[in-house]
Amino acid sequence: MAMKYLDKYPKNLAKSLWVLKPCWAVMKLFAKTVTHRSMTILYPYEKEWIPDNYRGRPGLRFDKCVGCGMCVRMCPTACIKLIEVPDDEGKPVMRPQVNLGRCAMCGYCAEYCPLDAMTVTPDYELAEYTRYDLLYGPRRLNYEGTTPGMEVKLEVTLPSDIENGNPERRVSFFDLDRPELTDSKCIGCKKCAKVCPVNAIEMVEKGVNDKGKPILRPVIDNSKCICCSNCVLDCPKDALQIKEVL
Amino acid sequence: MVQEYSSILDWIVFNDPMKNPYYPFVDTYNLPFDIGYKLWEILGGAIAWLINLIFPGNPVSTWLVCDATSTLMGLLIFMLLIFIIAFVSTLIVLWMERKCLGRMMDRRGTMVGMKGFLQCVADGLKTFMKENTAPKKVDKMTYWWCVSLIVGLSVLVLCMVPLSQRWFVVDYQTGLLIIMAFFALAPFLILVSGWAQNNKYSLIGGMRAAELMISYEVPMLILIATTALLAGSFNIGDIVNAQNETVWYIIPQIIGAITFFFCATAEAERVPFDIAEAEAELVEGWQTEYAGMKWGLIMLGDYMRGSVSCSMFAILYLGGWTLPFIGNGPIPEIVFLLKSYLVFFFMILIRCALARVRTDQILNIGWKVFMPLSVINLAIVLLLKVGGVF
Image (tube, rainbow over all chains, first blue to last red; front, top):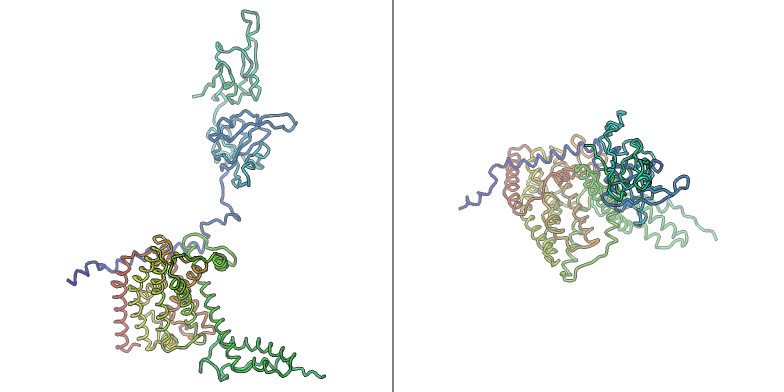
């Protein structure tokens, strides 16, 4: 009967020495963290290292931007809006304005910007007192010290490539997407030429119609075209399409 | 009128406190009392001199510097001094726990001023600022008395631990037993306060404290008795001197030292034996309903008992305030505190490394592991004693 109470007795007392194992691990970690620094970063005083293409708030290089609206169309949270601002000479131009209260810091705007005017910045301390203060106008989006790594390229261009002095796009000039005209649908309304932000479309006379009036057709200057697809979207008869390079 | 000018040095004479007929410590030298006595001689002598300048030949001045008043005021300053030293050493223990625990977890610990030491002060201020609320349906008397007694007993026990041959409050012949008796009172009060708070978590915490106590108290007392047997005395000074004459008792009683270390951890209710508090299971255990400064004082009391545990370990096994081949150094108090901090460091290590024991394991550990180990230790000591080694 008395032996029944001994059933639960630890069979091998030496097995309880397992407690030494975590103690030893802790001791090792302690020795390491006393001689070296610990993992914690004293945040307001020292900051974590961030890579060159860190996706913080978007930045804008005002002079490079042509106001094509690609970023507006690509933004997944719809936080970018084109607004009219005076440029350096006082002429009104369209430039993006970012609502950082809604921005998801995905960096798509920088990725899709055809002129690399939109960049990502390593700026992540963005707290403000009101929501209104979170509206970043085109001038406020400016970021001093933009490096090539911050212009996130849509084509594969790694930061290591830029470091090695190889920042070119790995796509040949003829492999780019370009708008293409379906001639039978076009009515020659000149809308595409008006909306083109880089003036790549020129309306050219191609003969005369039955009533003796000139037939106008857009001719796209491929060296100027940035493939922003504004002409495609604004065409009233769907005569223009983006010809994708496969 | 010719004013008779009496020099201030007529009033401040550094008498030997041992020559004072009212000297409270019979024939042993007591450093904190000496400091307190001399401080009063400066302070009281200056006051007496000032009063005497204004009212020459008044009785108040002579009363302020007479033997009896000096002893009384010296005793008051002595109490303050003992408490402040104990309190500051507890704060150092608290700071050490925070910093070492942080480093062991690969973080930095507290960073507020003086390498994080001032965080204790900040916490104290914060808890002082809090509203002192008490729930409506608690048992008023036990609720208030238990917390006062737990904190008071912790302070009392901490002040009773002698820091050296010359730094003590009372030199009892049975000092070890008295300290241990006061030390073991806390779990009873925890049980009662857990009952008084009218809260399920507190009640479970109190029950667990009682369960914990019945499992570690018996082996611990056997270990203390073993050490007393080896030294032949319950007087703390005698135990330390006996270790100084032979070897530190950690060498013959290595099993007992390890067992006592774990029992002392349980006595101070620290991880892995903090089942009464167990903030992961019971909200804050038996302290759930204590708000504001009550909780702050309870935490302070916990750390005080932790540092008493370490001090007891240092006294029983590490030779107290003596060093091998040196004996009493120039500042034995510092040696003693350093030894107790070393023990506390191992407590922190255990806290960081091990998980909390389950409530069903604690009785097994107490009665099936600690108890046989302490009895084996007792047998070894008996053999050594009978064999004439000690």
